[in-house]
Image (cartoon, rainbow, N blue to C red; front, side, top):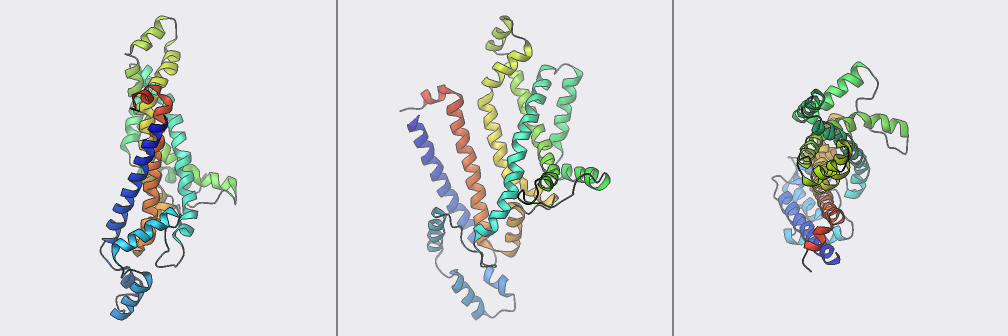
Length: 317
């Protein structure tokens, strides 16, 4: 177990290092000059060169990369070219918005998908099961920004029950914080829940053909109990895989939801930084998102070992 964990940690940190190389050099290769953009097209070449020297942009790329990498090890993502503030000071407030959005949406999506997938599998030859399956198809086909727009029109514009946009920190008002997250979280839950429900349905249908399920039925277990107790446990490894992949995708896909509901999260910060060519913020946000995705994948690997002891024995010592 320890050797397996050590190998996964080595792969994790190696992947983070490789990602930092890719992110830095791709962003630095983007067209445009941040110094010229800051001073304006009418600036003299001397002024542009002086600003580039002040920001250290005249130094070799490899030197700037290692300086940035050393800062990452100390938790320093650099300083914004345009504002002069640290990247962390600008990411911090935005990270809370995206964190709440993703952190609430994924567990709720799983809670919705599990019973729906179970119903769709057990009653697949009945009208109720067919309807659940059809609704999941429809929800999966509609883009997330369309779902968000429709919910806004219905519940914010027509009925006036909920605010259409904006965010209030939980420390200021718990009630207002919850009201402003209902629509964006519901938007993600609808789309993600439909995707997960279809996967859960397919997994439970596969379980119905397995010998251990037929054995459970033969000794007197009810269909629902046997499928829920034995089926869920045996498909948990593949379910964790899908949840990990969807959580990683959601970290990036939340950008669209933030734009629809005007939430000042990491997505809006990244878009603003790209428009302003503030490369340090673009690098910082990109690296943070990549680190979050890799961390999720690492935790999924650990979950495999915890769920299925056979995988521990399969790892060579």
